[in-house]
Image 1: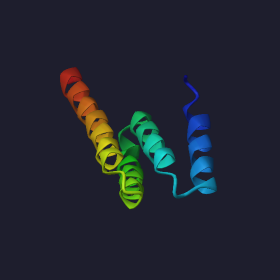
Image 2: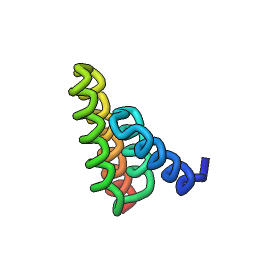
Image 3: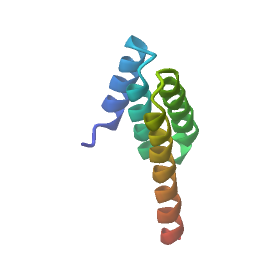
Length: 85
């Protein structure tokens, strides 16, 4: 809702409180993708953490789902940029 810096602050706080929360890392990753191309490496890193944490919990479905969300977001950005050019 146009409060991305505040949202980023809240996600980093949530991760600081519970660094083993795969949902917090996954949601933060999607926020980073929305912040722009310069944050994509950070987004990928956060999503990898999320996937690993879901794996550790034995939740293979969510492990793959969070990676699919990231790939979808990155693909959409790529196609939108290509379409724009």
